[in-house]
Structure formats: C-alpha cells, structure tokens
Length: 391
Ligand SMILES: Cc1ncc(COP(=O)(O)O)c(C=O)c1O
Image (cartoon, rainbow, N blue to C red):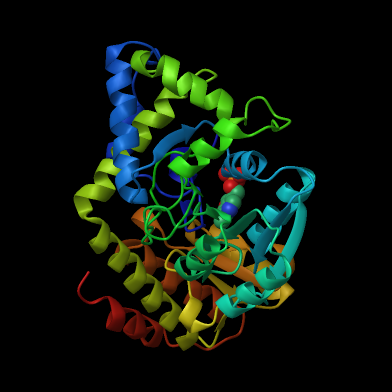
C-alpha cells in the first residue's frame, strides 16, 4: 500500500486529486443497492449528471471503465459490417477505431496530425463518399495530445446526415462545456475520476431518446449481453423503483462519491468552472513556453484539462522521474505517437488551481535547470499569473 505521506500529487490526466468532501462521502459502510433510500441517491445522482451533460435524455451510471462504456455505444448503434466514421487525432481516437474494428464495423478513418484537428469540411467530403455510414465517433478532449475537438461542428454534420453521434467526453466531463442535446449527441460518455474529481471506476453516460427508439426496432443484437442497451432498458423500466436499474450489482460507493463531486461542480457553477479550467490551462501553457518548451497542441485547439509538452526521450524520462523523486509530483509520459516525445500534465478538477500549478511550474523549472537549462523561475510564473489573476 502507498503510504499517504508518500502518495504522489496527481498532476496526471486522471485519476486526479479528489476533494475531502468526496473522500468523506465514500467513507461509509456499504449501502445495499435496493430500497427507497438507495433509489433516491441514484435518482439524485443521475439528475445532477443530466445537468452537466445538458440533456433531457436518459443518464446511466456505467459500472466500469470509460472504454467499455464507449464499446456499449458503438456496439448498440452500428451493426457488424456497417460503416462508422471515426475522427482521430490521438491515442484515444485510435482506441475508438480499435473498438469499432473489434466489433466488426467497417471503419472510415478521418485522421489529423497530433496537435491538430480534423476540419469539419473534411468530414462533409468524406460523408459524400460514404452516405451509407451509420455512426460518427469522436473524442471530445484528446487526452494524449491535449487537444479539444470541435464536437459541436461535427454534431451539426452528423445530424444533417442522420448519423448516430457518439462522443467520448471522458477527460472533459465537468471541466468543459457539453451540450448533449443542442449539439446533436446521441451517446456521450463522461467519467467520474478525471475532471469531475471523484473516485475512478464509473462512467456517467448520456443516452438520447432516439437511441432507445432505434434499439426498440433493431432486428440484430450486439454480441455482448452486458453491453446490450435493450437489456439495460428492461432493468431501467422494471427495477428503477427499487433503486436497481442495472443488470448487475451496483457500485454504491463510487456512485455516492460521484453524487458529491457533481454537487461540488454544480455549486461552483458550470460556467465558472469552465472558465477556471480555461484560464489555468492558458496560464500553464504560457508558463511552459516561457521555459522554452513546446506545447503539442496548436493554441486554438489546446485543451483546458491536459497539456502535452514536447521533449526528447532522454529528457522526458528524466523529467518524469525527477518530478516524482524530488517534488513528489506525478506527471504522465507521452502515449501513442508521442511515446518518448512528450510528457503530459493534467490540470483538472482540484488541480486546475494556483495551489497545484504554481508548485508544478516551480518544480519543473528546478528539474529543467538541473538538466542544464537556465530558466529564471520568475518568468514562467509571471506568465502564469498574467492569465489567472481573477480566479
Ligand atoms: C479521452 C479518453 N478516452 C478513453 C479513455 C479510457 O478510459 P478508461 O481507462 O476508463 O477505459 C481515457 C482514459 O484516460 C481518455 O482520457
């Protein structure tokens, strides 16, 4: 077990630091997932999540990893042999491709270089050639590169072309605006243990009413029983009154933590929370550049929750190790095409604050200076404060 005194500060893009109120809420005996009291907790949790998604559709709390929740979406909406357009500009976009291929879907891949986004006109052109496509899948916030994708624009095209629109909002949920209904999203996966700052292990999922209409008349079944939304719909209808709208045992502790984290986010105010993430991220990128380092994302697409920073393989390893050993700060390595070419810093939920970022900047400067750079710490800090004065 990691001793709490040596537990690293999590400046990674999830799991992330969790507020004391959320930790306190999960320090309780096990709840049975039956009965009126539990039903009220579950209903309140989904109602709060609905506000973050901005949807009038159904919200379920998926008991497992975000990847499985994404698999649920694709496997219910695009049959084996049917076409799905996948937009990818990073490791998690590639994961959507892998999921769709495993399910036997024909993937039409639209790719952008790491750090950039696919232009909406490219999507329109591809759809001219693939009018038989059934779905469109994309990552909102590409955690591998620190890029935010224009999901609102893609959503307009998805609706014009009658595509089911599946969005991975795993590392943006609770930190970046999401308008599930207005942006035409049919199936949207959030996550508890990233920007929302709850304990990991469950994924709130918004499911549009069109999806339930579609599966009602669907003549094929997904090969997974557990991921079949028809199975879930039956339990939602029949077992909801007893607080158990699940085909399996409910992870009650995680849901109680999620409820607390949702309350904290909504009490802060979503607009304010989005602005806090934007400003902290902007300030951090300015500080990074003032250290002479390069941010992977082009500025206009830069993520409010994670920054990927280019570096050589030798330096990346040293930076990650020294940050941990000397300052007890955990930052992440590059993944996908950025393996050995970048390291990543998460600034989400609690860590999107002066408290965490100032210490991270100052530690990073000291690590870089010990590697031979000559950085005056006051420069990056000044840049950071210039963007974050009012938060
Ligand atoms: C954007 C994105 N999608 C998918 C995943 C995978 O989520 P999980 O590990 O819960 O399956 C992650 C995890 O970091 C992510 O950031």
